[in-house]
Image (tube, rainbow, N blue to C red; front, side, top):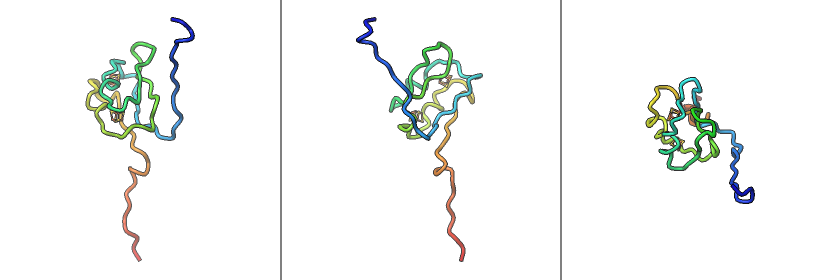
Length: 92
Ligand code: SF4
Ligand code: SF4
């Protein structure tokens, strides 16, 4: 390929880490990549390894990727801390 026409991509830094892959279980089938409607990840250039999450901040935690994954526990969602907290009324 002509160097001038080569496309590159880099992970966009973000404090959120929405997807947790278990590298020992993930088969690198990329079904999660295909089902994501906001395309936050791309297939890993290394065959058989978990996808690369390029845009972690764009995930809206729909869970489709986890449901589509054929390997139990290979992929889990990690919700932002604010969404995991439970707020209760203060008692006077
Ligand atoms: S939870 Fe939804 S938006 Fe987030 S990576 Fe999975 S499919 Fe994409
Ligand atoms: S669908 Fe599951 S096994 Fe396939 S690449 Fe994604 S996390 Fe890995």
